[in-house]
Length: 138
Image (cartoon, rainbow, N blue to C red):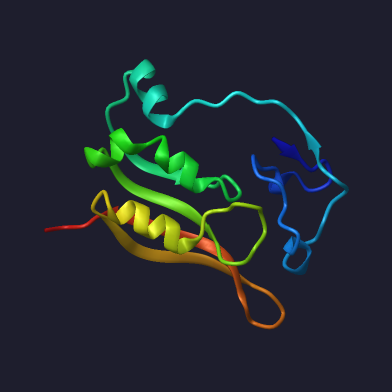
């Protein structure tokens, strides 16, 4: 985990992108801390969870990897709604784009329901926001 002591909301499993300073304040250099992770599919099996009404994902660019660990739930349409942060500018190296996430979820029959909470820079460029995806009706 890349830990930013002065700006903890930017902590991520991904390092900052070289251009991230154009879009957000920078904190002191990050420190790295080892953390363990588990897929959501594995966690739900171990805890006996077979359905999720609302899954909120805000993992600072790591959303695609989280979704990859949720394939079982997604393939069964066991997630009723996904509320997911979308980053539209380069903030983290290797971050998921809106198109990556929308395309990935589309393969499981999920479609965009709505956008929320857009944040723009001083020039009007969209930086990030949230999107809700739900299973598409036939």
